[in-house]
Length: 139
Image (cartoon, rainbow, N blue to C red; front, side, top):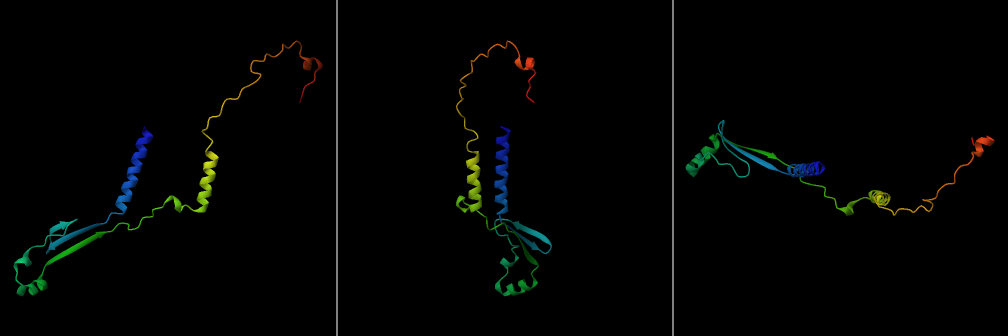
């Protein structure tokens, strides 16, 4: 049970790692003077609104004297991922994988029990120990 929970947790963490490494983010900030007016992450920022009320004749003066500025922070993620298919395995890895599977394929097979023909054979009684009497021993 613990092994299953750890496996699912590790798999989820790896999926989140891939997600966040490929995630790009842009943060826009609009300042009027030194005051922060608006911050936007997924949309465009709202401007001060001063230049909307000014007519076209004063627009050139506004551009010269404007105290507003926009900041743009870009956090770019990884653009390319290496996605390998089973067909992309090198020749060495194919040979190694084949040898590994051939070697370990028979480890968990069950074999039939062998019959012992002399299982119920009773040995004859030992009357005298001839080796001790003759004092002949294998060394």
